Length: 114
Length: 111
Image (tube, rainbow over all chains, first blue to last red; front, side, top):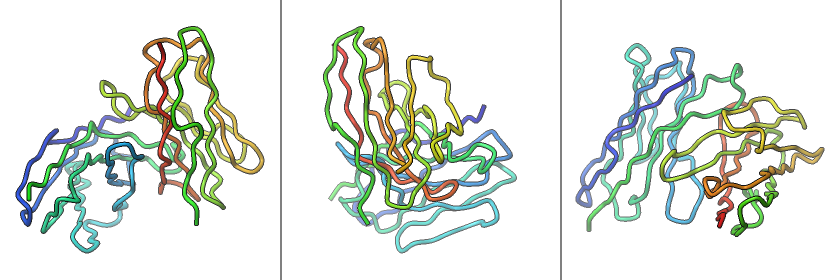
């Protein structure tokens, strides 16, 4: 089955710095790559996603890049703020053949220090 | 639009009992997926329902089951609870494939 590895497991940055989280996956049929942010006591919140026909997508301070050849994708957060502190999960899906099933990475605890 | 709602939010059960969790998807969403989240195993897919049919199933024992109703609301049931079933159970809904929106989860504690 699909295997997703996420690094680092913890990341501490100063407010205003950039943060980068990376994920690799194993199934070349994967074609959808979302990122979720989970705050304490809440469910995961979809923050950005990318599909396999796109190499990069940006939404204000958040961007995701995808390298299908190398089977890895990354989340980039610029100008970090204390409210960005949370656990971030990457996920992959193989699309219609697997329905809406997502396989998640282990998560990254991001701490933004004021 | 209202988000995904899950009830109850917290639940305490003892070993051997059974439990039923409920999920109401975002209006218009026909797919409902369930995930188990634990510190040790992370987020793991349980199953997905689409138009009242199970479309996909993860690697969980038969004690875990689910169903979906004609209004897309879904329930999951865990029978003969074990200590290891203590977890946050998350429900997610989607309109078509992929984009999934999660509810706040049900925190199940098995004593």
